[in-house]
Image 1 (cartoon, rainbow over the protein chains, first blue to last red):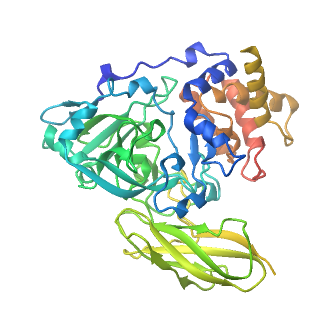
Image 2 (cartoon, rainbow over the protein chains, first blue to last red):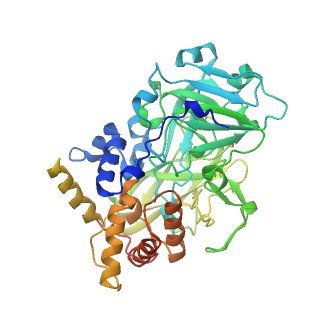
Length: 399
Length: 98
């Protein structure tokens, strides 16, 4: 299925590294994405740009106060991958190629400069890790314990995947598009990160192969030189370091498609054994809001206090955001502000009069134009995906 | 280089420090040693220490890692699951162990 001779040779790391710790130290050098590691470790002169959840391979989320900016700055956008980025020489302009094959009329091999042959478009879209908020599920689900910041909103510039597929020409039985990047696991037995999206999403005019983020070329940690952006869908589809696009007649095989990134299509009890057929792929985002200000744990003076945040949903639009300051007994409408763009998040604001001294909780919940409302708590699922429970910030109002 | 390794080794070890629940000393020590040396081949220790999982979840997780090449014998795998289930159960303190 994949173009075997284009695979980067793996390091056979484990076989050479029975010593464990020595191997780990070597691996940490291989994986150290210096720009963010060093930045994340800074902090004496202000809040860390990112909150590191896993040091190696780097998984780091954005502090929520950064979301006061409509566009999330590139260097503060969350970082997530299974294996860490590929070696820079694998994706430099002279080496990198995008191969398009499988059930097409003609295979393509495109260099970076060849992408200029296609129409360029820019889309503002939320990109969110499927596991964002996993730490709030009870009981806990295994995986990176993301809290609120594995999400961001950026302007993505690139070309339509549909235009590239049209150039290759689809065969009659083309149903799914399989995607693979240049990143590789350290150990041969670990499955490659191969994902697929159904043809309907692949051909959607807003699904793009992006090479710029907020006007700048993609950085190594965020998928340089090319990544998929599937607006409205969770980021497990937004493959980074993209090198192989293979058209198939069914979903991709392998762990990261058949087992991971799936959730039950019905409510389940923790510990319940599910058949594979009961699990479906994580695709569209669900409606969600975040309180950006005031910050968690803030000590506030009494009086008028603006409560601000962002809200987003999958392939619909935000219809309203409500705020509660009495633990969800009553809800008041917030005012939607700023840009109103499909796939992007919507900023909102509520004027709270903090009259009662003491500890208080501020809650926010969003509703989209399809009538989906943020629940108090998300349905539990074994992988801890799609957390969308109402956001809650605890503050202390001074007397 | 020797100094760097020594410092890093202390750093890794400190991630696993802290009071251990009731568990035989030998299982606790061997389990901690296995976690410190085998898990961190592919990922840093923080990915493990942030988990709060049931025995069944730990067993499934470690089994997957062995399938993916983690160098653990059958008996070592059992000890590691015992250690992790006892050290990082669902009701363990939410405070980081570092």
